[in-house]
Image (cartoon, rainbow, N blue to C red; front, side, top):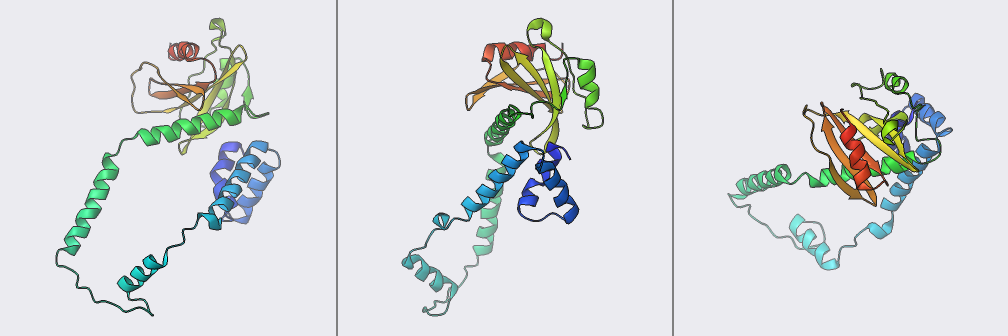
Length: 246
């Protein structure tokens, strides 16, 4: 079992929802992967924090009394309320409004969540022993390594002549799917390039952003989406992004 497979099962494992065979597989992986152990401990800590009594809201007595009156709970004088004829239509209208708001709300929050996940994966990759699954500066070694592991073929090139040598590659997991991660280096800065398929087949200009102090560059080229992330400055990261697809 590798890291992407283990991460898919960590939530169920922490909740005790896996069968015996799967649980043993995850435990075997955790014995050899400090990164996944840290992620499991973070899940356990989150569960403990969410179960804290401090997060519970104690309703005031006035609210309790009002709820009992409306629901006819024992111990309180109940009131009989006739449901207006228009109430079902009003309820249906409210549901429709909520659904319309959900459909029309901007997708910025989803992009922000994905960008934050990308930075987290980049940071985890810099921990000891997790940067690469295949270590090589030879594109003809790294590219075939992904065969059979993904439902697409990532474009792998070495840009050592331009000052961005290829370090290797690994499997990663982003936004609910397996992705390719290529690792390059610029002086002492490591760069992760996460790759997954998109519907658009045209090459777009790089678009940059900064998340938690890390620079991200997004670009679509020939049906593949590339996100470059590093603490390298935005200008040099953009240079590397422009080399993609050439």
